[in-house]
Length: 88
Image (cartoon, rainbow, N blue to C red):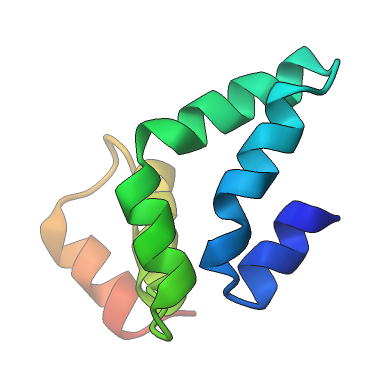
């Protein structure tokens, strides 16, 4: 999988080659994905060249949003705070 390898090994120099391959493919879903990735090319290149990751932060944000959705309409901020600071 060229895309996965490019991401795992931080190969930003392969990005344009990957886009060319996808452009010439017959899979419309992949072409749509590539167009979306190309719309934010600067961020993708930065992600491929940077050794840093925001994965841990994104995971915590996702967990907090899930808790908030789970409690929607049932409680206020103090209960959310208690569930975040002292999870069951």
